[in-house]
Length: 418
Image 1 (tube, helix red, strand yellow):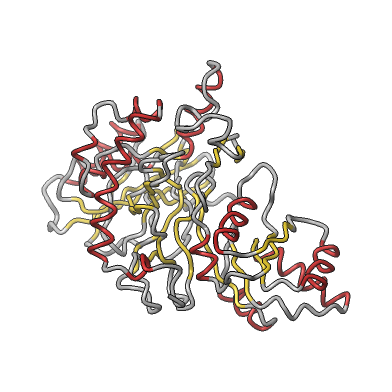
Image 2 (cartoon, helix red, strand yellow; image 1 turned 120 degrees about the horizontal axis):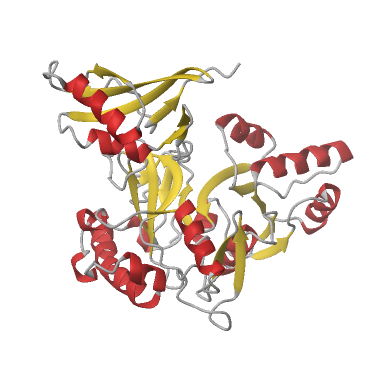
């Protein structure tokens, strides 16, 4: 096929869902058997029963800060540096180890295209035989290796440019004439501006795949004016590729190797398609089988299929961070606490805690959507629940369904810090 990386991208959606849900209980069983961390986390779970999304949604979400805490706890006891999440040990089954801030340590296994980046690189226009100038970092974090292994799986040659040394980057591009660039958009902009300053033409660089930073339309158009068609990918150091942009430029298509959910921040509850929430991913990676990993990123599912013919789910892309924990009058209030309050009242469909006032003079108002017309005593009961759960006083405002913004915010900090 010339339009797709492989036939999986054009599968019937029902066929894909059936394949994912067939693989899901096997992956849960593998994680429970081979990963000491998941053996404990899933000790009361029967993998054979996790055969549909509703069952998956009952499993706990493991968020990045929890992964860090479990790794730190394990290391403090002289245990696994990976907190018991990796199913492989050092040696021939693990090629590299990387570190993200924390530090969180991530293993790189031996599977071909371990991070599953080839599909995204293909969608950005790269083909077998291309030379790729890879300017992602090759030390500590896995970004450089992610892209290199994906490029090799696609049949491309890689120049490991890494970061810094702008003039040498320009020289290498001018002499090697790569087909394109992979890295952050800001660094390619710096390289192109330096090339213009030096009077060096770089006509071979006509395509790029970007990650690690926002890629707004204004920057996309700037690159197009320089003759470079840039596309973005969405990946994390924990699960690898999650989604990627296509020539349609209508959201990001979810990778074939993950099962994606969008959940209400601070909870594990899936939201309706179109509603903004936290991206939660279940990876089918056997070396690092993360089940319901909370990325901490906000996004939303887009309706329909990609105009390119790819049939997998599309998401809007990165829409902010999901961790909205806020300190109010010296106390931390978490999105999960807002969810605890709301779940006490079935008539409430959505809620948003708005913090106002000035520093040291905070006020908080819980805005709740309900279809009921002024239910008896609801506001007063909610005020009591706020005090019970957060140990703080707050006001309540009842609004009509659809009144609250669809931006994924459960806690809005609207205070003035001037």
